Structures are given as C-alpha cells and as structure tokens.
Length: 199
Ligand SMILES: Cc1cc2nc3c(=O)[nH]c(=O)nc-3n(C[C@H](O)[C@H](O)[C@H](O)COP(=O)(O)O)c2cc1C
Image (cartoon, rainbow, N blue to C red; front, top):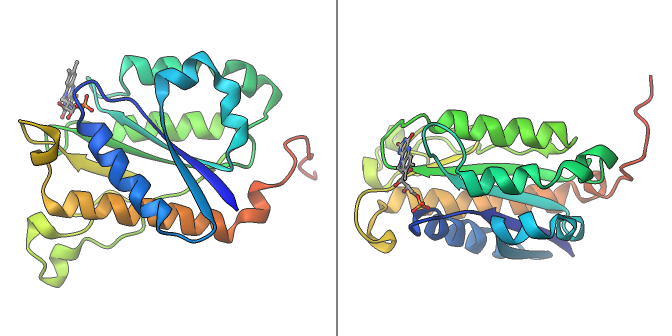
C-alpha cells in the first residue's frame, strides 16, 4: 500500500473543491491510500509528512504565487529540508485562480522549486487538451493546457458552481495519474534519503 496526501489551502472553498476531485481520482487507484490534509495542520506538525510516499500540493493563486498559509506550510518544512528526509518522495502541484491565465504558472513553479529543494521527484499533468479532439471547450480535459501541474479556473459564486465540468474532470484524471505513477514507481519512493548519489 502506497500513501499520498493532497495538501491544500483554501480561503473560500474553491481550491478545496478541486482538492476533493483530485483526491477522488487518487483513491480510484487500487493499492493507494490517499488523505486530504490542510496545509495549516501540517505547518504546525510537519513531521506528519514522513508518513507519506507522495504529495499533491494545492494552493489558490494569490497575486501570482501561493497563498500566505500555503507558504507558511512550505517554510515549516525547513528542518526536514536540512535532513533531506523527504528526498525521493513524489510531488505534484495544482492551483486555482479566477482568471484564465492569472499567473497560475508562477504558483506551480514555486511548488516545483519547493519539491526540488527537498529532492523530490516531480510528476506533471500529461493530459492532451481534449478540445482539439472536438470535445466542447468547457467539458474538455486539460482545456487550460497546463502540463507542469493542474490548473483550474474558478468563476464567481459558491465553489460547487464555480467550475466547468472539464476542470473537475481534469482534477480527477490528475489525481489518478499521480496515484498510478506512485504505484508504479513505488520502489523509487522507498529509497533511503541518506543514500548517496554516485559520483
Ligand atoms: C489576495 C488575492 C489575490 C489573488 N490573486 C489572483 C491572481 O493573481 N490571479 C488570479 O487569477 N486570481 C487571483 N485571485 C483570485 C483567487 O485565485 C480565486 O478567487 C480563487 O478561486 C480563490 O481560491 P480559494 O477559494 O480556494 O481561496 C486572488 C484572490 C485574492 C483574495
């Protein structure tokens, strides 16, 4: 059994909504246990990360970056960085914002750099945009065309009504892809953090 955590912050429920779809996709893979964890819980107790083989990181895009509470979670892992205890675990990222572009890429980039500093292995979002195959734009998987991580666009109103079906579908596919990758690369994730890289 491999374990993963979908770690998120959400002030108004939009990122939480997408996180639940990511979780659903991950839980559909046999041999995977997936938990939904709030970033501020982990900021208080970062050693809980050691229980997991992989992390799917989720934050709203605020002013072109991760939200303050999500950054506090990242910063709380400093001691784990020093000892490289998260090395070789799998990581991926997703972000939600209100504009079609909205500088979401830079949010994903800060998650990617965080994962790289910890020596993790990054998993992308290898889904071809379905609108090119004739699927209506709002129903198309990866309609926003993001391969480095998952992007979703939130409209106004309650979280349950804020997303087009294509974005929630992509979230489930992204969670499933990550879980399948973790399952397939299980032995890499289990390598000891202290193992030296041969010169
Ligand atoms: C302080 C702040 C900054 C924001 N900056 C951006 C931004 O840079 N780009 C964007 O498209 N939306 C931006 N938004 C909109 C949020 O990304 C959007 O409302 C998102 O759905 C919020 O997610 P949440 O409900 O999970 O908190 C911003 C919202 C706030 C409150």
